[in-house]
Amino acid sequence: MPRFFFNHTSHDDVSVDKSGTVFPSRRTPISTPCRAILDIAFEKLRDRVDPAEDEIISEGGVLLATIPFSEMLRPHHKGRTESPTEQLLAISARLIERNRTLQAQFNEEFARTEASFRTIRSNLVRLDAACSTYWPRAK
Image (tube, rainbow, N blue to C red):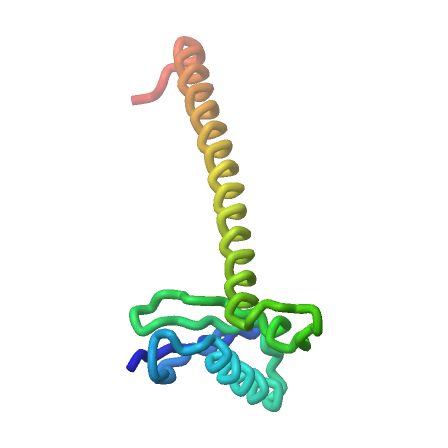
């Protein structure tokens, strides 16, 4: 039977689930882990710790879902037709897309920084060559 781990995040603090929870199958409905997450979050609230989000991690260490605590507390709307699994998948998809956007922005900024460093390096080489006749290096 598969074991899942529920890591709890509260701002800068991460509580790592070292023992995990065993579920009957890999196809266990997400509602069962959601109930477990709610139980953990309510324990944290009782201890006056503000729960931020929970991560569901497989036995192999693969992050399966990140669930913001605020999403767990939202009441079901009458017009909503999505199952809890679909809702969590949508949340995870939004977070994955946000991650991709941030990675792309980081890569663009890193490329600009590298280009600036190359320009500075070439300017220093030219400056060194131009000034070497006026200020010879001491050996």
